[in-house]
Image (cartoon, rainbow, N blue to C red; front, side, top):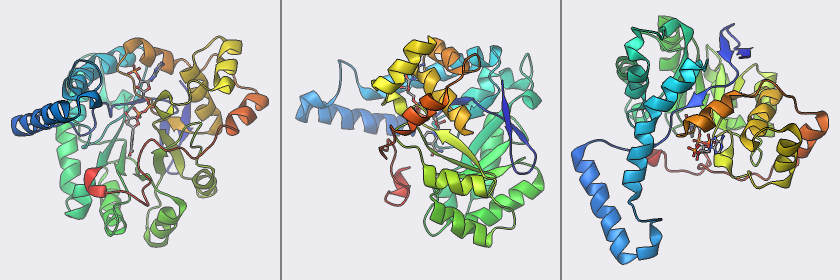
Length: 316
Ligand SMILES: NC(=O)c1ccc[n+]([C@@H]2O[C@H](COP(=O)([O-])OP(=O)(O)OC[C@H]3O[C@@H](n4cnc5c(N)ncnc54)[C@H](OP(=O)(O)O)[C@@H]3O)[C@@H](O)[C@H]2O)c1
């Protein structure tokens, strides 16, 4: 497993696992009932709008349940970086449970755990309390990297002051942001006492983020690629399939290797243990300059997630 080094000297694994499987799923009985009613109404009014024979809620819960199994399997096989968030359903608690509350075979100090403050916490000025809740969920007294989940308009610059306090307290060994464009980073840099060490943003062959990438490189900010395979949206590309066939590896491995060679940390998600193990295996082969240039040509600015300049932060 390779590592990169953050601006404060902290070592971060170059590849890990993202736990945002069923983003936003609530386990609260009232919310579950509300969603079932909504899905039933949708089924009756627009019968073709839900895929297959089951409800999307059931599918989300099934995926949600896989998290512990997959996390444990890949940790047993050497995965050390896990990305979670308060916004990802119960995933922080699931990680604690997957690792036996850090009491058995898994030792907290061997892992690099990332979690994030919600947009709501930013709006309500409760980022510190959000971190405390995350620490309780994760069963730890520190996180390796704490992030602001989105550049919540009107709040993220003030929230950053709290992030700096958190960093000074030692409860986060590094701090950073997510989903920031260059203008967000510039605004932040103009007020920050401690510069963000990371920008975690959507990045994959169809959305290569060269502008932010160049800014980050110039300011020693590590890019973490979330949605690093673009949910495999580019898996049909002839370029990727050609490289994958020549090297005898999967398309996802080609994409994750491309991230590594671009200098990105990547955090792919999978609910399938075999896929997750495959995604860890990106070290025994190399992309040529021609491969890298060909993949560069796939960039078309296609987003999976909302553009942070044009989104409803209440829904993220
Ligand atoms: N900071 C933020 O704002 C933010 C936003 C979004 C996401 N994230 C983080 O990024 C992580 C990953 O994002 P994501 O799940 O949206 O996108 P992703 O990792 O690019 O894509 C996941 C999808 O790709 C499929 N897949 C993965 N590996 C595969 C393989 N080897 N073969 C075939 N299919 C494969 C998975 O299906 P299977 O389950 O069938 O394998 C799943 O449908 C999240 O879990 C979260 O931690 C952060």
